[in-house]
Length: 317
Ligand SMILES: [Zn+2]
Ligand SMILES: [Zn+2]
Image (cartoon, rainbow, N blue to C red):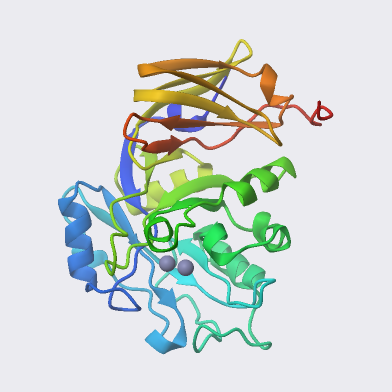
């Protein structure tokens, strides 16, 4: 039996948004009001991640004053340096940055040749202690070449971005993430808001982090270990592989799905399902398997991948 660590680690799940903007870059609300709204909506923690560009003075906003009983914050930024293969500037999420993280040479949103590459600034953020994620792959138009450049540096891929869902109907990062997993890159999967409060881009996608305390250091360590799942609504209570099936326990759902490499996927459907066993034969001996759950309102939750130990996918049939 192989169980995801999020469901065996001690502690409880804390709900947080890892990607948020304020008036310190191009968001509409000031940092205090952004924190107030997330706290009022029942979130346990928030990372304010304003755009780290010269235009706004390379902000790493001090959100410590907005921590209250039952609500904490993690310092961070959305980093920008170097061109993606399409010639546009990289967007890289960094949660858990020190306040004195050295500025990049990024005066605005146009890349230039003298900058650090995306991979270089991502590596610098990891070295400084951050949890780093490849932001909104579908909105950015990331190629596999872009993904490979960061895949062994970043911890995670942003697989759902609520702002991109509402603002451009390109919310997801699954194609990139699944193909990078199939190539063997050890990545986890986060859902975020990327809230600017300029459109209905808030309270739509979040990460549930398992930790013993709602404390920035404990949350950051849990994120790096992969002790979390992502959601737009449903709760996941257990995800494990047992007797050749993916076993999922969750809040009431209509579909429980096992997903693997290539065309490998299998769903079970029902009414008010709180447990599902999805046989894995159809997943073609995938080296990784992840769970998705869909509820009656169409809201979804996603586990991190379970590495199965299979070393080579079977030939396609
Ligand atoms: Zn972005
Ligand atoms: Zn953003």
